[in-house]
Every structure is written in structure tokens, then in C-alpha cells.
Image (tube, rainbow, N blue to C red; front, side, top):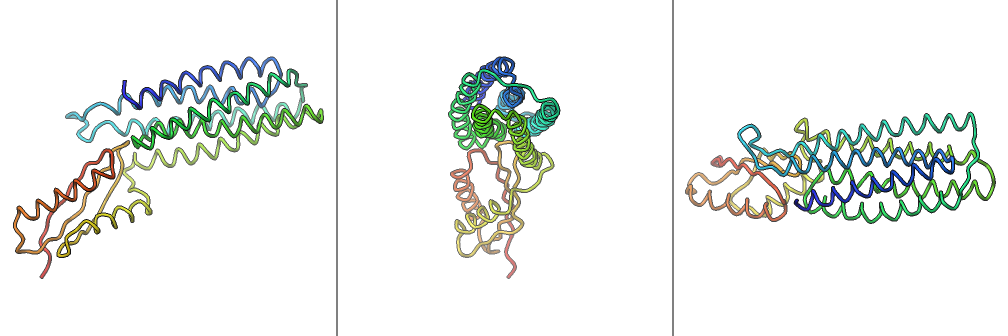
Length: 286
């Protein structure tokens, strides 16, 4: 099992544990915000399973049917995870509105706050490791999973605050209000995630800031008498696909032009973990 699959498996375990704990405490305390967090964690668990499957498939070598590899399975995973978050948010809002109409008393304040703070701590450390591996491997599936857990940290702290306010004031309306706030944060997270994961599926180019950095880097590596045009780049999972036209002096030999291409490819492979580079050489106009 590679590094990406290992950290995805850890996420599955932590989400399973937290979902069970939140569900038990939510039922015991009667807190809709904790039950909403249990739903959120259950969705995170399903998302973690999807991410685990996606990183396992994306790790397969290119084949005849998939000459560019299987990286887009990670993007599909990201879109599915985002849709799951939307579903969770809608259910949370529905339950919270029901609690606003028919308020219910909350008990076991200490247990309720304890499980939410425990959840925040666990998710903080797991999400940090997920982000680390996602950055090292350029994995959108793991980044999506990390984003889920990072949001869980904030929402768990928010729910804890709501429970504390109910304990101090006796006003139960804080519980569904904080549950709705959790749902709104989740919706925002889902939108950003789907947008990021979906763009590579339609072969959208990399964002303008990254494109400008790539363009400047390639130009800094070029010999003075050469230039590039028609630079394009897109992502296939963690694989960057880059192609451009290299303009060289007409009198330059094929060997010299080939050496320049080799140097450019070597430089690009130092900044991209996985990259497919295609350089077309053309003579410069006199």
C-alpha cells in the first residue's frame, strides 16, 4: 500500500470512530447540532472510502485504454465528495429547522462538549497529515478529504460553543442556529471542492497564477536565442500535462535543439512530481 492509500485508510478509521461517537452522544444528549455533525462525519466516512478507492485506482500504470494514466479517478472522487457534502448540508438544515419549530431539551452537556472537542483534536491532526501527503503527491482526492476534516474542526468547535451557551443561558435555540451555521460552512466547502475537482474533467487549463509561474519558469531556463509559444497545461489527477512550441534559430542542429528540450524537461520534472511534457520544435522566423 503506497503513501496515499495509507493516509486515506487512516482517514477511514478516524471518521468511523467519530461518526459512531457523535451518533451515540447526539442521541443521548438530544443535540441536533451534534447529530448534524454525526451526519457530516458519516458523509466524510463515505468520502474517505471513495478517496481510498480513487487513489488506489489512480496509482495504476498507464495502459492502452488510458495512455495518460488513471489520474482523473481522483477528480471524479472529488466531485462525488462535494455532492455528498451538499446532501449532508441540506439534511442538517432540515433537521435544524424542525428543532427551531419544536425545541427539545439538551442533556449530558459535559459528554456532548467532550466528544466535540475530541473530534476537533482528532480531525486537526488527521487533516494536517492528509494535507501534507496531498501536497507531496498533488492528490486532489486527499486534498478533498483533508478539506472535509479541516471544516469539521471548525464546526466541532462551533457546536461546542453552542452547547456551552445553552448550558450557561438555558436557551436551546442556540443548538439549531449553530447547526445551520455548520451547514452553511459545509455548502461553501462543497462548492469550492466541486469547482476545483470538476475543471480537470473538462480539460480546463491550470489557473492563471500557476500558468504565469510556469511560463516565467520555462522562459528563465531558455537559452537567449530561443523562445516559446502556445504554452498549454492541464491536470489529469496528480499528473500535469504540459505542451508548448520551442522556437530555435533555423541554423541550429537537431542535436542542439534536442539537448535544450532535454534540459527543459529535466528542470520541469524537478518542480512537478508527475508530469507529461510534449515540446514541438520549430525554426524562428528570420
